Length: 110
Image (cartoon, rainbow, N blue to C red; front, side, top):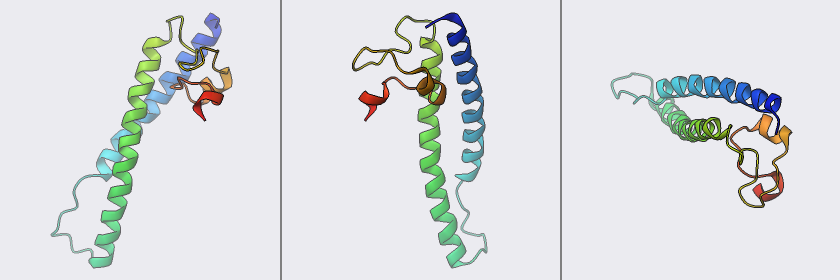
């Protein structure tokens, strides 16, 4: 992997980190407890509780992605970046641009 590719990956990781952090902020707001004194009606309250559960799951996934992206950023300058952890072959550049946190090639990820 040459320096230009690494620079492109760094920019992609930083942009994705910014987006994920923004998403996490929004999801934190959406997962705040629903006060029982809200007079929103029984069905609306059930819908709000369901939406809160969905947002909590999204928040967990976003936090995991944030952790993986931060790890990828730290590993970017290491010789093993872009190498599949299972088969030790290079991960396709398109996959790394789409999912910079990838540690496996497409074949091994299946």
